[in-house]
Length: 96
Image (cartoon, rainbow, N blue to C red; front, side):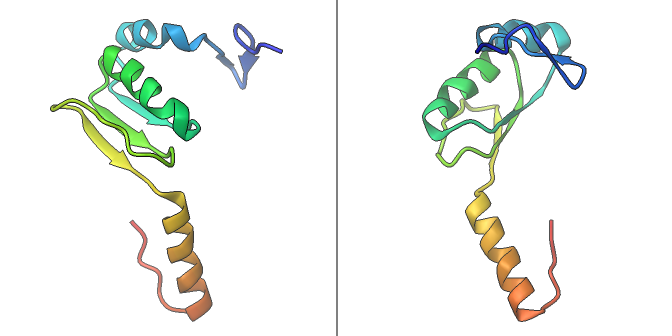
């Protein structure tokens, strides 16, 4: 079942092919990737095509971006491991 065109929590679900146009029209400068690994680079390319200047990547894969685009990748397994360690050791957690 396609969700494209439907509303979710007040936001219209758009076709991914429209990403570059929408980003450009709305002057969006930061993109967040939360896709499976195999789709991450394709999504990054679309975000860049739309003019984003920074990407926060939660996908479990390295992606390439051109010079001038800032990239921050977050490995959730490492973040969970660190949090779990501090909970187990009852040490003070210094988060970001």
